[in-house]
Image (cartoon, rainbow, N blue to C red; front, side, top):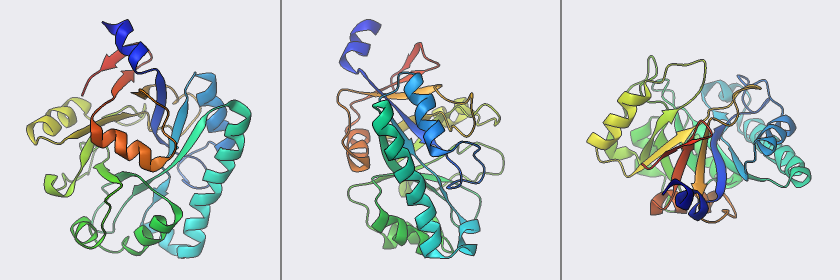
Length: 234
């Protein structure tokens, strides 16, 4: 059965990763991140760099440009390593320190997202229509996180495998099922060398862009590979 699943879902994609300077908490330049994942046999990686209150100090133009520059640098490196790179974001509002992963992202949307950093999730969800995107709460049971209203979420990052944080993945998974959240994901939350390769979205086809990743997540037609040799069927 396992071999059949792996055959049916052959493509491996990291959904949660960070590069520097797009995310100051990461030590990895875009080129190095791409190389590390290519060496692990991944077919794609989503850059989910932070867009958070600290970025208000830069102003919108520079904050968005930082995000795009890392993405472009990763795309350029990807050509050498035969791996796909996708644009995502980890968005935080001023109301608390919660993080929200969004798939189905482009530069125009990043400009919109920036304007809502001073607001809150409820306002954002009321005023910003994202018909081709999905928003998920990241590592919701990590210290000092606040559980968001499930009605405002498309899903949840149940398994956050960052090696230096306790994300209480069991509680997150249990909560997501109890609240009937449709989309449940796993992410490596890669920040530094050695973090790579702990979780992979496995898909039937290689998405062409970030919006197609959102479409796949909405469809439920995917599995996850955890730790390189275990499968999770959310």
